Image 1 (cartoon, rainbow, N blue to C red):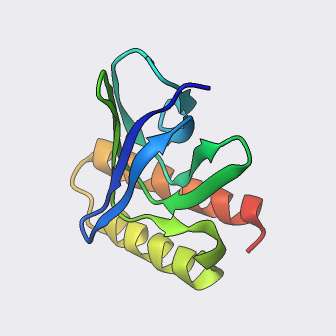
Image 2: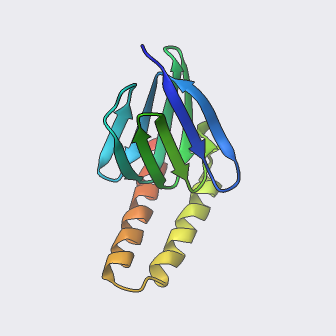
Image 3: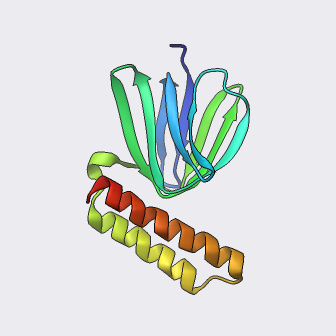
Length: 133
């Protein structure tokens, strides 16, 4: 499989930079997989797991609470609020994320902001149930 460049960036650091074969992204409109020569795209991400396939048998799974993904001719750039390797994800971390979103809900100005925050909270709860943590 042909490789392309991926950069996954959080406010704290450059989480990943390198050549990959495929990346599965949790988009708000549904999960999508990026391969080499993917059509240009900008998408919002929902809370979920980004799966980076560096080689057929080498996969890196990272939890992201949201962000943006941009596919360009030069590769894929993911701007994530944070990125945590899945083995490091625990119930306490997800509880903190849910608490942060509940504060967003309480302080939301307008129905659309509130709706988006409620949706994000529900996605985090669903993720916790799926991961069984």
